[in-house]
Image 1: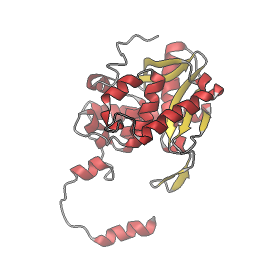
Image 2: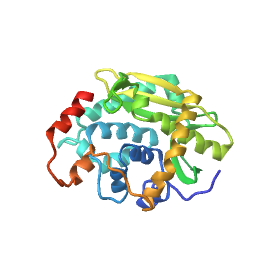
Image 3: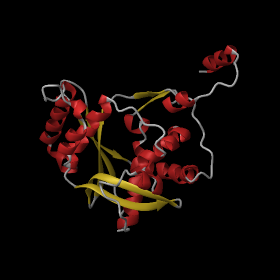
Length: 265
């Protein structure tokens, strides 16, 4: 194993987020370089939604840190001390997952396994939800298993493609390979937030898909690292909340220019 000083307590510290690239950080740079950099510097924080907290609630259960999570998030409780309805459903999601033997088997590996490595000369860190000697498993809580419309590409996509979990899988597989000399398969243990009954799936991402995603990471991460080190200027996407918040108007624009864009779309 490649030595490191990362722990569950300092994994997401500002210092270690600057020292290492992670899969979520990489995907943030993919979406908007300016927003990703601002978030690293503490100048911008993403909105914490119920949907995000429900996923974090289920994650915390499997990490064995649910009591700590509850103590940190008083907003999940009603005034009488009981869990709000959406978090009671999160409890039911956990119970449903644990009733399934195969799902539970894949989630029975070593929890929150931390490894580090290097891709294209850039230091990476990963934290695996369920690590087995023969496979890598990541837990995902999703709205449902329906396709999601990607407005930028104009197509509907599987949630794995839409959220870039193939990129996460590629990074995890490569860092595990560097630490174990084994190229392990990457699985997603997914559960939906649907009511009244959540659905379960175990997905395998094909190796050729991970190979292609790794090439994307290798080609782009040197630029993202250059932005982190202030050697390169980040590009603004112009569409995200951070870009809208920091936009400075410089001159009027001809509304017909936007009409032409709409016609092309």
